Length: 155
Image (cartoon, rainbow, N blue to C red; front, side, top):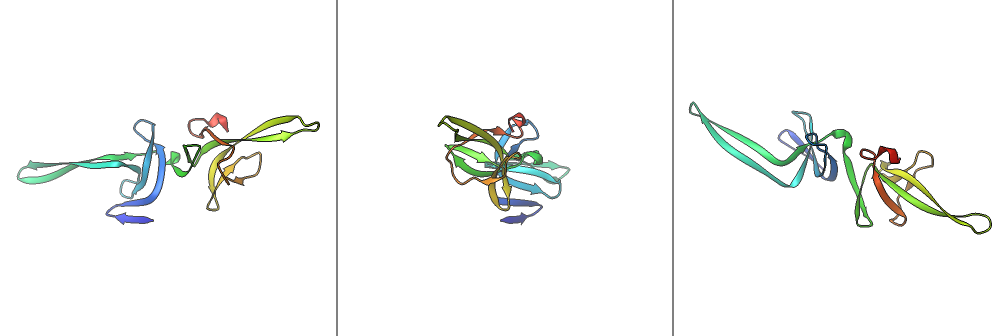
């Protein structure tokens, strides 16, 4: 749902994570786009505002600072997908799945494939360029091994 309040567009009910611009650390919250400054922001649960009233030449001016609102790198925005094995899974996470293979003679081997979590046609898919995309049907066999921003070498 999109709400426009004053000069910000709040995309509520869209839990995301992204890297903060000021320290390059991950932060989780809800996405806001500021149409005036063209800033991509996340606000967290603990949002609050410091307000100071300053008088200068008989004119009162209100200065405010919002805490719990952070500017983010729009290129690192990841939407929340699910929880698998007690771990949050996000768009752009790298997942690994192992398959048992039986060769002639009954010898068993494990083949591991890695792919990136992507939204395609309104469905969350595990995508591997070498193979075909397939749906993430369940939690069996999937292990999160990283994400494309912090661990691009794992893909």
